Image (cartoon, rainbow, N blue to C red):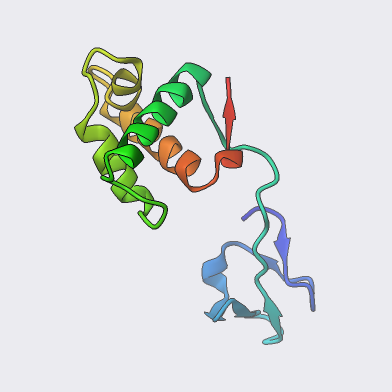
Length: 126
């Protein structure tokens, strides 16, 4: 939270913990004035997935739709569960989701897939 200041008095805030917050309305500890904490929209993809992985993912999704395992009302968790259950362990998508000896990378990659399932514009295809 570097260089954040109260918009009312200019008090430099060390962290959001300096402020009392109720429903994103913050109270400055110095002047006790209130200001709104505004969210920002991501305007660029925040991660990268190889196009070959996306193609395999789309094939798995299409297969799951045709077998009626998921539908348009399914959430991202259902998609991931169904897709993971049917993966070939030698395939690129499986290796991307579950890389050998790197659980953290696998978790990160599965999160990227969830982002892609939510909105494909959130990830960049490489």
